[in-house]
Image 1 (spheres, rainbow, N blue to C red):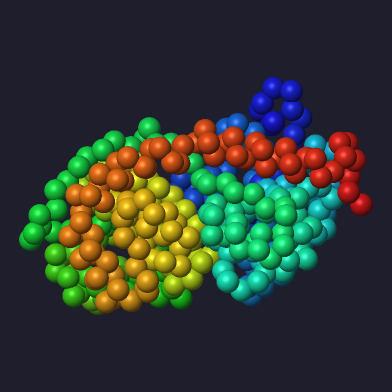
Image 2 (image 1 turned 120 degrees about the vertical axis):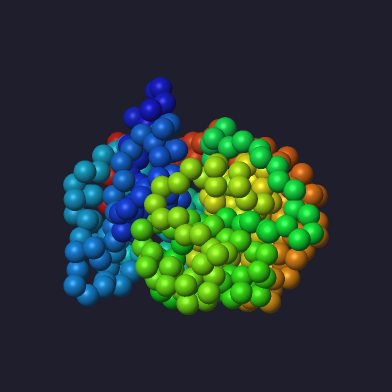
Length: 354
């Protein structure tokens, strides 16, 4: 497939985000780079808002690119679209070749547009929670694909966490909008740090709203507890100096079901703290590689951090075991290969769908 022998498959990866300033820090770009290493293909950004004076709604995404996409289609084209939630983008129905729709952030309890999803060649989800929901609603074109990371990039640097020691936590997946300071838990996390003088945070930023987070840290009086690192960073080195990684979301779809920052932490042998809305919380609870909190509030985060501290040695030992075992790139690529084969089979070779 793509770069694999004997296959002429032509992958086109579609993204509804703006081109990131630091692709190496952005999860979709990392995932696509892995897929390109085996299958080839190129990326098309379908979000028009970089060039518009007034933001366009999601219903308009991709419509401007639709004519050029159709002109470039061949009998071997397969589209792979990535989006946090199962939103029904109209332009996808105008494509004449199979579409793999990856719902990277998971599926909520509210039923999506099932008629739209049935017209996708494959609906791929990273977590068992979302897979079960879609199947319960009668979809039979769904597939599970957990993400994979380069676990060899990370080394284990165990740190003790004795009573009275500062608890050092790395947090990534910075907000894209001001509203996400609340929905991604950064407001609650800073409030928790005000209540816990022994909590030290390293926030990994990506060139958006940098002045905003620094102003919030200063206004909260947390300059001695919170470090903001903007742009590319040696994540292995950052995790080597930390006890854990954390990531919160008030609802599914705000971050990936299996956020790369938490997978990186597990590969480095560091336990994780997350919220129940993120589907990975099920895995965290089942394996014991960290703590899942019910709500994204200062009190819930403080309680979660207290539980993490109390059982730290056990959580760390599990993280050291599962992080490199369960999220290898090879397994993720094999799952993608099977999904692309299924997608290819939905259209006759060499014929465009009319």
